Length: 148
Ligand SMILES: [Zn+2]
Ligand SMILES: [Zn+2]
Image (cartoon, rainbow, N blue to C red; front, side, top):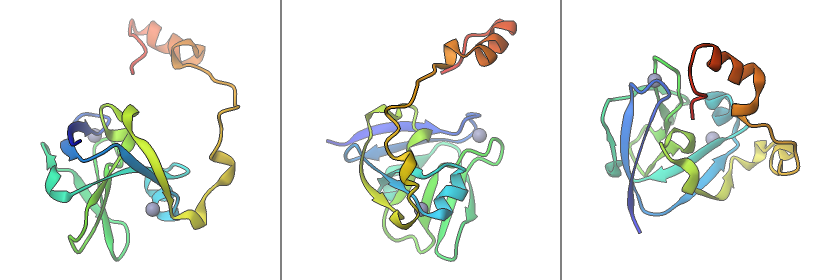
């Protein structure tokens, strides 16, 4: 079942619409994705290129000899990945979707660089932003709600 989903960067300058065929997503643990996102891995959803419509064109940089990555040069949000030869689908970062909650990870790519200790963190204590005083108090001082 295909579904149109929207997303974009943190500052709102770059927006996209994408037609997704399913809820499949995956982790890429390769070192280039770690550096490109600053995370322990990149969470991606693969989409046919023709099914991605940029409402405002992203910036692109060549992250290797074979690939480039869209991002927002105003706020820095990593938005995805595509091969330079234009073949195959492209990836959009799961976290850049307006609603990333429905995606399901189905595989690990770049498995040679997996940080195993981060894979199952369910047992760790959980803190919530709205009740984290050093964050919530700063928003409250400005008369603002803690943003989503
Ligand atoms: Zn931005
Ligand atoms: Zn990667």
